[in-house]
Image (cartoon, rainbow, N blue to C red; front, side, top):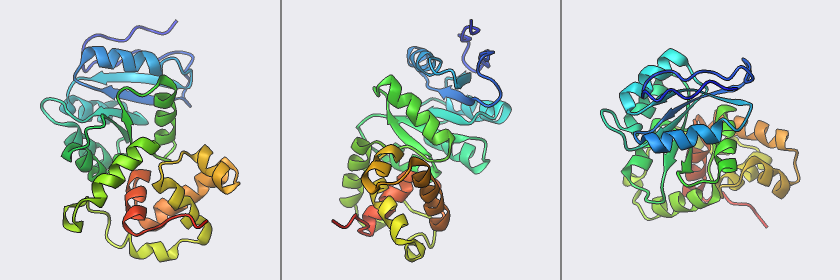
Amino acid sequence: MDEPVDELVGCPVGRSPEAGAAGIRVLVADDQAAVRSGLVLVLQTDPGITVVGEAGDGETAVRMAAELRPDVVLMDVQMPQLNGVAATRRIVERQLAEVLVLTTFDLNEYIFGALRAGAGGFILKNAEPAVLVSAVREVAHGDGFLTPAIARRLITEFAGRPPSASPSLPDGAAQALDTLTKRELEVLACIARGLANSAIAETLNLAEGTVKTHTSRILSKLNLRSRVQAAILAQQHGVALRE
């Protein structure tokens, strides 16, 4: 039986002996104990995921990420002492872990800040358990995560903002679009629609592994950290599937 989750915020959580060294290690950061407990319970249903710690504020999340070196930090954006955006930026800049941001449909400057900070994905707090597990796995593997619903909201919000008010992307990202192959542009267009790798594979009649390879190459060529950044860039520059 797995060791119980430590109730003390900021203390490491016992690792499951069944998880093994190859499992995905997750740090859960949320200031609400009940929410953290629920997230931990969901994640621990997957034998390939181990929750290695809990944090109730941003400062603790950064410290524990440095100490525990998880694969993914599941990060709430509104927390005391140091908000999730600032914590995400510190974790990403130090390359301590990938960050999956917990959010609601109320998109605001926290979300845009998390995008600029290099978050690897966004997931709704009320997401189904299977979606949460899938999101953690995608982000851990470097693929990022963006649901169609969140993609539509992000794109709609960005479309209504002047360029100067949109989140900044790495220099040269737009120019690098010319370096993408036709197939990579097709994959990018699907990413902009918020499609998961499995859906992209079905849409383009490709193997899922091939989609992952294309996605990695796209992010590398465009010097982007996440699918979210790729989706926004594609929308801003009119990258779309041709019928």
